Image (cartoon, rainbow, N blue to C red; front, side, top):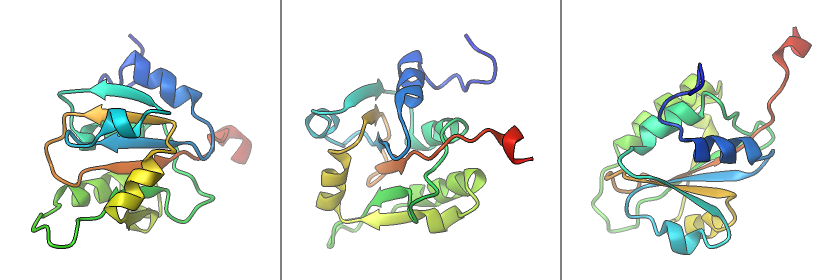
Length: 151
């Protein structure tokens, strides 16, 4: 056990977050996402029993979002004709805003099949137990800076 590390982050997930470099992508996948088939070339980490919002909160305590791209957070768009509400997106916006000054401006939506193609390039996919529909997101990692250097 370590001090200051959110308990929801498993040793396997912490290792992957540490391995990731600038511009690498991390998918937070809901329970319906085809993590194993989309993640054939990625590390797939199981986080059954955990929701995406609680994992996002913990991850963003350690994981900077990329400042070299306009939208380092991607959400899967609702398919035309689906009568699905996405209240979880408001939670995501609040969580991102608490971690990144760009707030909702750091987030974009991507058409479902384009999202799958983007997810295929991810370094890792976290397969959660999230039951909300269209709760998938991709985070693009930024640079960890030495804050003492900037004072």
